Image (cartoon, rainbow, N blue to C red):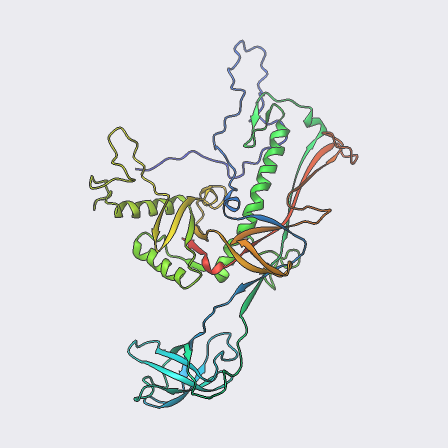
Length: 463
């Protein structure tokens, strides 16, 4: 059955002047019948704001620099996955050459012991001790009497599992420095403005207007100003989610530098799931296996659109015995802790589940809103997995370790200037007396950046 939907405006920006849509234009005094009018504006779209995501998962804190830098821990243990041998199978010793991307020198020392495994054949393994190291070449002697199990054309993985030294020998030669990865982001300046002439401010309408923040009255410009403010507050969040840095050679590089938004940070150094929503435990097991290789954060929140939310509900309902093979509800079990009777409303949704880790589910309005990401095809995002809690990072500005939420906003501020959310009025109307302009102009400004810490623990779900 097809679902017919009403039309909607993709540009619902209010106007500051009287229009046929909000003022009576038929002044036919020969008509003896007056229309019945509803003077209060009907809120047919409910709460139209899409912000709240960052307020739920992050925090805001001041910064006084054009550049925000932080250090994230590297791996504690050492493993190389693209290694080849210069010796043939059965050799007692060999020189292993590391070819992993970005590796310029082997972090392996003489006396350490290695586990070596063939990447394509699980039966070919060796244990070896390091006898010499030169750049990317590691010379080893095998513990097995049969020598090297793999050939010169095989690619192997190796990792350090310990060390062994003889009696009365010198200690370990050399040492390893802690490996940190330095990340940075730059704040961007976000602006908006609302303007209304003094004459229009003196016009009273017949429609009582209201906005999500509770402002009411018969002055249309008040509604327009309040909606501009609400729209700007939404942009403060959506800009942090969607922002991308301007690439060298791009058209925007001459006028804008851009910033790293949430989606960009996850795509750049996080985990991306594509090809449809995960709809069964096997696919969620793949996600859990990936999280095991990262920070293994115990609690995570899934912010999803409506279709992804229903897919999760259907998956959990099937596991709970509520959905039979034909897709209908069976009588085998019921949601929750208590049996549902005929007079009880059946709750067909789930707020979370545990599968290796705790996953809590929350609908993300931004992904559903038809005027934002809802309904788009190219570049569609169905949801994002965000680790809960906070992490310890080294703050380059503070010069010390600090607890930070995985997601947080840094806004420019000092003792004399706070740019978190600035607003001011100019002109010669509405109580402002700053210029000869016969209008009131309300200005909005913020300067901020989003810091995505430990992006390797996030998962972006693309359509």
